[in-house]
Image (cartoon, rainbow, N blue to C red; front, side, top):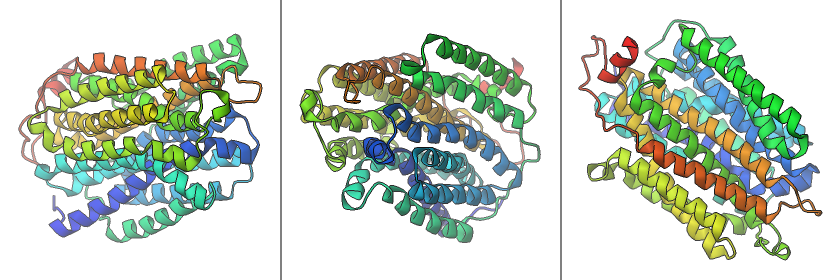
Length: 478
């Protein structure tokens, strides 16, 4: 298969990194301004959190679905569709007259979740095997830093303009990226014939909605409807798994999920995604609670972003060093250490959040944890599957993080918005409980990370020969 020249490879990586980084920024950009949007659009605290949750839900479904379409019709074409959906969603969000339209716009933006698997797949097609691992690691670092940058940049943008510019600016960036992708991303050299398993996509979206709605609305709906929807979610989930196991073209390859390194790393990604995005979403909200309540800082959106700056800086620095550090600290060890630091940080937030420096310190520690774990999880996945399945496996890991994020934010939203004060603000106990739950999730991630086996990628077979690994052979045999 012909590969791109070095200059074209750098250009392709730059376009893909720009698209993925901008999309990652969109996932967290609205988190610090949820209170502002709530006041401006005259909605409730539990409803406005769906501006974030709806995006995560849409991305959870669109990521495997459009990734599969990209394999069939070409990743370059599907990437253009994903970028166009993000741009259109940003335009609708910037003009949204009410929260319903804004949530619909965020669903449209979430269709761009396909940027993740498509980027990994294009890297797999166009980069030689010896550069593939570093390229995937670099892309993972871009995704992590992009998510953190959104929190910090939201404050200055809102302070100088207003919250609608959080969508106008990405609209311009995505429009430019769309043009560059059209010109510079090469046509996919690999196409995989098949069909889209639409029934699996419907079941995936159905069980996620049935799960997320009662989790986020538990405080206002009562026991019966919550229990009923949770039971329905379990039934739909089991049905989805059964359909995927029998499918010739599954959206999520359950056979690959059985590989020891893959399933353990993906469970850690699920738990880490839940903790990470919940901290992104609700720590700035805590900072903006009026100081008169006795527990908030009364911070503006801009000051809340500055208090989150230690998270971004430590995440960027440690994430950049994560790849070279594998010579001394294995990817498995980095994931374990990252999960430990996540648990320590969330515990600190639950126990000590009286002063801004305490929150900034905890955020900085959390950033170190993300920097260590984010790229290391992708590296573990890449090393445990055949080269030909790198894009699929990496995209699956990113999607599982997104599913974890949607579940985590829905759970934390339900906890924080349960039993609001008479003035409509969350109570301190809600935040304390939420951070304690996140500490528990991160602790569980540590325990699962300890189960990750110490494995190495088998020597790549020639391009014309079937590629296999001992783990995949075991899974196929079973």
